[in-house]
Length: 481
Image 1 (cartoon, one colour):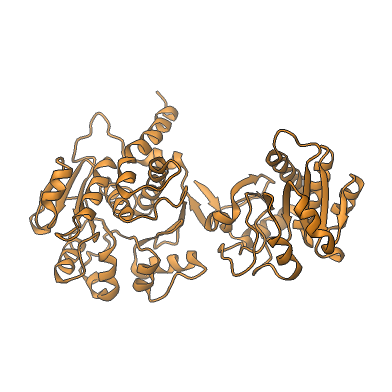
Image 2: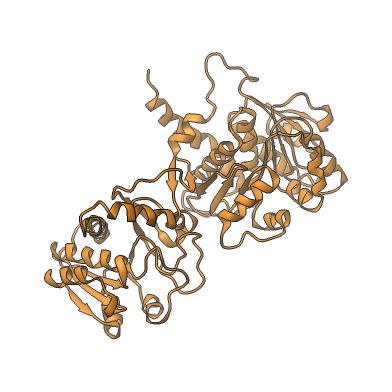
């Protein structure tokens, strides 16, 4: 698992480390990491290329200046544009000048930005809030070359990733010690994130991102003693005569996510059977045999029948993934939750509009705080969909899954996700981990299906086995014989 820490905790850890480290040592280490990444972005021919530094006050500007000094040693033509000359880092500025770097003021900035093969953004650091202003905003608008950001793209909020005005868009961001929320909450602005270890001591991260090895190790893989029941029986209460596709997608996702058995209950039973003959289908949840989890809501409607189905599965005493129409029902008729068997795990999977209906407020810029509060309010795991999907547990844990593209912005993809979550719940995984692991494989399947072009929910569904094969190959490679 990869940890992400708030900037307040990062800065406190940096202060502790600075107190026991020789002056300048951490900045040199950080700046060298920036210089290495800059050289990599310049390609095979580094000497003679042109790099422009956008330098603000404080340590971020100092990192950029020292990085420029290191690049000069490799024959790079480096020009530093000082946005606030009186606050430029003295030692970094002296090092760049000594190495033969050029230092100019803002009026000359447009010329050197236009001439740059690479721009290094050292305008503001972790303490900054709000958009770029004044001359910094004007210079940022002129950038056409690739940008390497120092710690974060300037103008993007470091803790919630929000952008409220002019801001830098980086192709790559070099960060130090640990990743910050901005790197996973606004990956579009950060680009590729490269972590440089400077020796920070941190515990108990504020956000967690599951790695492929974590998901591979926990995903149910049949063993010699397993059977269809020990692998988990997933119940799907989804779809309707008007919307049978949701049932087909959710049931198919549970099948392909390696559920031992899938039972379907609803009006789309015949359609589900025609697509998935291995699914045991019936017309009503009251006729369904025992299951170990329920997926409820996709395409099931918000009328009285939909309510009765939702109340039935909530009272069944097994984990429930409530999606789509189920979240709408809960938003408008919260008393339905009274049917829930106390202590029964519940996973809610709203997009931002459904989240606003459920909680009475939009997620806002601080999506982490919003989803954490919702998880406490409903005593449930809440998965808030988005390019950066957030998964919060009632105990305060928050996970994040960064999509590999925007391929999941297509009708029916949420039905696929809910079916996968249901399969993992039936297998007995912790609900928070189940939701995060399903989101991880869901985005991987979308990437494999898309191959660089838009795909469909059916395409994502078809690519689940390929995504799992990738994971299982890793799992088998690291498992002792």
